Image (cartoon, rainbow, N blue to C red; front, side):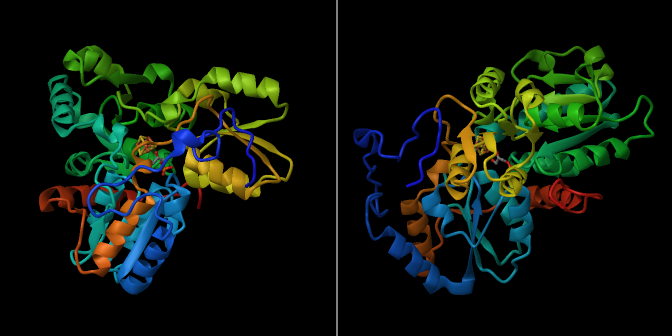
Length: 394
Ligand code: 13P
Ligand code: SF4
């Protein structure tokens, strides 16, 4: 196995066999240590043939990603799901909001399956529809709702996307947030005082894009805290702001710290710091490059042999990049192990269980968005897919 220079040995590398015992799965799931799992996954996939299309997000485990027909970031996977109308089943190896988006973007005869229903997203859970509706009421009371365009990150539940669709807004991903914000500000450019954006649910992606790409200042941004009365903001603060950021964050990317950037720069001269825009603003300010997971992968692929990189994104992807590029020095931008625990819920036993069930004629763990939510979420998603200009990777 290629050794990777990571600050801490992550799990699964033979560091501590006692902590790496397989966990037995309940019910009919195969045991995690079952040596036949790979063969069973292959057999089920072969039996299903073109009826199944397997999508894998870049943060998925190696044991699962090997079975994906396509891999990608959330933007690419949304496009790929929409472009496969002939597949009866879409098995989504990712998290719940991604599977919901795939259900919305695919036809009524297609069924989307999430192998483990516990694969949610703590960031998406930070914005609930009732909370967002209360914030909207406060904006109406402050007399600004007519100038606000809601923009939600893909990492949100379908009902938040539907809220944006209903209220003239759009969905964005980490690879097209700048284009989406440009579009949003143009929608209300003629309103007195100019347009405002309510950005859900990731304050960091919103702030990083507004300040580093759109030329806004930190003073143009306020943070709406759904757990405080009136979001913790006065009506005047709401009226003065251009970006109203929802107080949400990614528990994985929120861990990266500016001090680690400093110590790695001191330790490894010439190291390049490459981070995802879900990282905190202080971290992004210290980075050399910032972009979505697709951007991170392409940057490493294009990097010269011998170059050194510290990457601030989910550990499964960083490890995979380190293993694929042994000619480059790739380290993880955190002192501790940091997988996305919900992405990691999709493991080989759950994947095999979902695939074998499908092959036997039983659909398990179907993700189905209700028709009214679907209708309005689709409006916001289609606005995203039709955005003018370029994403960072086109
Ligand atoms: P992207 O796939 O848009 O890079 O987002 C990363 C992420 O956090 C997915 O959950
Ligand atoms: Fe959610 Fe962050 Fe995990 Fe992505 S990496 S699924 S945003 S918790």
